[in-house]
Image (cartoon, rainbow, N blue to C red; front, side, top):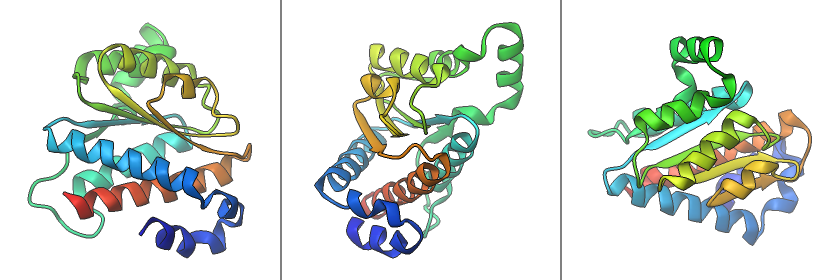
Length: 189
């Protein structure tokens, strides 16, 4: 299924051709399995990113709550941390932008949850701080990154890295991978 979905997208993602090997497939399978286990255990997935990655995090979280192909009777527990603009703007103004996701994890995160982060550089301080907190508090971290993976890969249980430094191409592949993961989850729970 993963190969089929990736091959359907290759026409608009020619740079992905070299990634369709065991590396990508195993990382997507592992990420999907961890999320499925987390949701089956009554835990939640929390998403975050900055800029375009924030929009994608919000989009992918919505796919789990609403369903991509089916309207589930029971939605999956998924929340996007960058959706609370009142908190983000207040906390950034009164404290520090580098702690916006960390602060929300302190409030919402529980041992056994997952933090799923999207970052094209992998170096966003607010993402790295949240991932560090997550790992120290029993929250698994899955990251989608680009270029070298940046600092976030050191704080990730699973890092899916797109070897490119072109932000737009990285984000195109991130949304493809995110949709595949959501599709696998929907078809297995």
